[in-house]
Amino acid sequence: MADLQAALAAHVSAALTAEFGAEYAGADPLIRPSAFADFQANVAMALAKRLGLPPRDVATRIASHLDQAPMCERAEVSGPGFINITLSDAWIGEAAAFQLGDPRLGIPVSDRPQRVVVDYSSPNVAKEMHVGHLRTTIVGDSVVRMLERLGHTVIRANHIGDWGTNFGMLLEHLIDIGEQAAYAQLAAGEINDFYQGAKVKFDADPAFADRSRRRVVALQAGDQETLRLWRTLIDDSKQYYNAIYAKLGVTLTDADLAPESFYNPLLEDVCRDLERAGIAVISDGALCAFPPGFTGRDGNPLPLILRKSDGGYGYGTTDMAAIRYRVGDLGADRIIYVVGSEQAQHFAMVFAVARQAGWLPDSVIAEHAAIGMVTGTDRKRFRSRSGESVKLIGLIDEAVSRAEKVIEDRYDDPELRAQIAHAVGIGALKYADLSVARESSYMLDFDRMLSLTGNSGPYLQYATARIRSIFRKGSVDPAGETGPIMLTAPAERALALRLLGFGAAVAESAQTAEPHRLAAFLFDLASDFTTFFEQCPVLKAESPQIRSSRLALAALTLDVVLAGLDLLGIPVPDRM
Image (tube, rainbow, N blue to C red; front, side):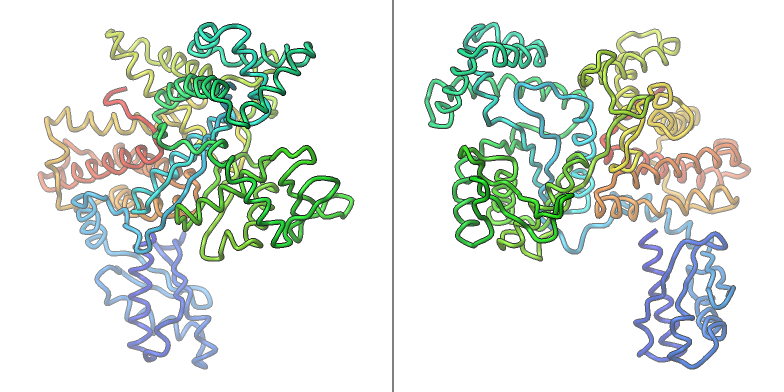
């Protein structure tokens, strides 16, 4: 819709020039979609005072020029001076036919391409990925896909947790049970068992705890044998995470790893430079920054701890080093952190300190794309019956298993059924998440997310299958249907007009890092197609010309839905 609004704004500007002179051409026409027509322009009331004329008179004079524009069927004045604009059916049809022939389907290429770092997923080594990682992983991946499609250079940053005091106990536990047994346990996906085995010993055995602390010192000092064991532990964990990414169809690879350990050599410089600049000071033995505007409940300034009193570094230090590196070395114009909403204050403080230090200049955008919780039916954080975090791999497998039961009576071929079940299950799981505003929590409900009706992934997948069935029944190749597109019924017009908004939906979703906006567009489009399908015969249209036009509309709808779902990272089976 943004392209349509821009085109209409240009027409309004031309009308202002023709009627009142060039000095008024720059007035903002405030073009908005309208319930009374296709769009509404609200420029007359703002200009009326400058012109010394009644708003309705100004609106009427502008509307008289818009009536002459090829894209406008009519422009009517309403209320105190609104201009309701109805687009021409012929123009909409021509624009839809042009979109069908456009390989980009109307998705614009940014005229100001940026280097964008997207920080997402971020599991911890030797810890199970849980349901909370689902949102950060698939939201981030969708944002990356959209930004790349718009022509931006995107740097994926998987900021895995692979450093810190926990690795002392993990490495000692690995040594205790033997490397082969440990690696076999991790390869089998028993990451929680491995971690809990180490934690239990650390809490119960003082000698083990002491060895673990010495192992941390050895790791930080660069002991070669300790580093070898540490790297192997990471490599085995990566294999497990990569298997999950493959199941989800996520585009992260090992080349995108930006682990905590990468920044470890930079932390001392971060602390020294902030202290020298007077931004960080010693407080209760710890080195802290106190960015303005952040206070606790007691009214005292809140600290961003950079170096703890025992000399260790925390998340704040690593995040400061990451910003400095991403701006200074990677040349980022924009950094998006797809991280849980509970980290909002932390990132606000990190950004504030980085701007104080000059490491995050005003020309660089840093934003926290906050992620809400996944909840159970009790509206509390989604957990297993035993109260533990739900393993992400278990959630994925359950979604696919339930999808197979939904379609089990439709296909005899077990291999085909398994392929479709995987696409439907993964699509249902991802769409249920991506269709919700990312900062909002949502309730995990398998029955709703796997439904073939309503706002669900399977509903959109089924829409593509239904369109493909039209072409199969007519023995027609969708690629061969190019129009022209003629609008002869209201349902055709509504569908074509919706299709023209695809590029704007992608651009807006990428700009705000909110995939739910694109998901909402696709659901509305699928709903418009359902109405079109029910009201406008395609293969049995009343004339060959109308048949060809409707086939072209169906082909364009198929292309747009497939492209949109691909940007959301949702697989689409050929049949359902």
